[in-house]
Length: 109
Image (tube, rainbow, N blue to C red; front, side):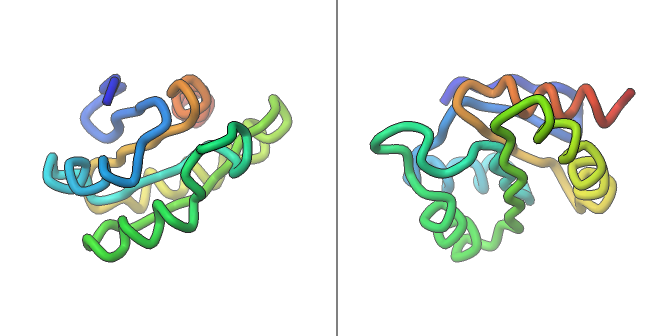
């Protein structure tokens, strides 16, 4: 996994595999957030499959998909609320990590 720690509360990543979820949990993350809509690429794991694995391992899950600039603006407040309510570090992913970073930047402006 290629990760980028934005601050002590959030790390972002490119698309994860279901097999990565345990390692994410084992690294101390308490929330797994997906900022990628389902079906963008063939073979992309569905959010439902990732969510099922994450919740089975005790992670809280959040789905805030972003496909456009308008989506990012609309998800700013929900993202901010999830970050404020987080009881530990958040691991967020999308295709490359960029949309996660954009949401984080928007929520801090």
